[in-house]
Length: 305
Image (cartoon, rainbow, N blue to C red; front, side, top):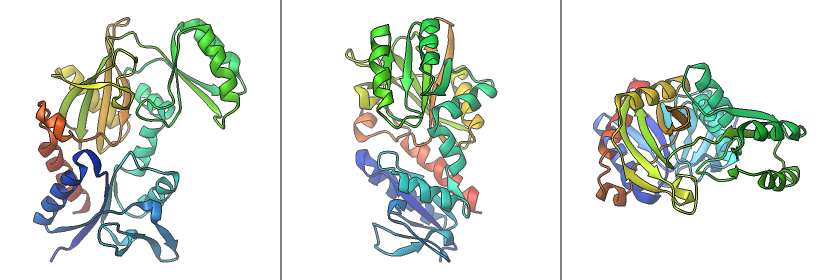
């Protein structure tokens, strides 16, 4: 009979259901029970804990009775889910830790942490919306820059500001939103491809790339980018490991660009929930899923034993 019990909330699309089952099976071999389908969006809090109904078994689970919670679902996150994730993380181990997860989700705070750790990032700037003159000053200094929501992902909400006209169009829009801080990054002159390096427990797992479409400057798949095969150098792997460590990540997908102007690699973003290869991507040669699953299971076992 298993003595340890972990909860899992994982995405199902793109082969995620198969990945989840492999994780569950490997945990079972280690006498670790896994309860899946724990979407904290549906959790309820009481004096004696936080109860969430498993969408898999329909049983009520007191999250604080678990030995660990593994949260791996980017696409279905809500503010309610994140709120409960933070609450759960105060009492049991989570992967990633909520602190690391929250840090990676905030572009300014994560880039500041990376810079302080000696990791090359883009030049960035943040100021309050009530001071648009700073945004104008940065445009005059940089000539070309990117506006990003602080907590956006997948390229959503980003805007390339490459002329005074685009800047003047954005400013009135910002005044009609609830955005408080304006976050900007200097546009990095690059070849419109990137490196995505997966790190688990500090170890290198895999590397592939993404290429922007002819219609967009972003490499994100959700923005029309496509997966390409890439071989990392020792330098790229070391950069990704250093970035992961700087943010305290158990699992990280580090996005790296080559800055053609400064002739150096730059960390663009650190993703706390980097996707596994889909069946279609596996067919084209991305074969890291089993290795990644093995390392995640080892990581879970290490944290609860």
